[in-house]
Image (cartoon, rainbow, N blue to C red; front, top):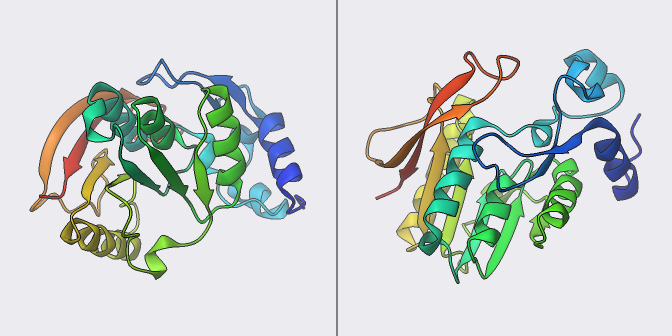
Length: 220
């Protein structure tokens, strides 16, 4: 079993990933898994045996890559603002927001491994982001958040419905809400505004095709 200490989690990440640039955001570098890293070959059963949740933090998912790309290309969306990166994973979106000039970024993910992954990835990119492992859905959206960014959040129906209600509440409070999504089954396109569309290189190990048409949407 993996020890629950931050040091043990950090060591596991360093041992099972390598520093590389995601294909759609080549100006960033992240510690990611690929076909030459050990974690890539671990099955769900093997992960469970060592006490590791599914390592979503070890991959640059299409929705996150598209959202990070959009933020980097449109820095005025976040520059000087207080930002929440919801379901942060590797931290790619949080790091992009900091690179684009955000005043504050809180990366949130209920997988505590994401805290160490974010710290390593932020350090590799010369930025510093805050992290929380609390489930933000258990409370109203933080009043201080001017922008909420969320990538790849609609892969399960109950979670998608819960997240969209929470994001809707944030928008009602006046926050800008942007979502990166590669056509997940439970993503509700109705009533949203498409801001951009990208062809994001990915891998058949993660997705159903090697390039995913991925859009960035805003809550109106």
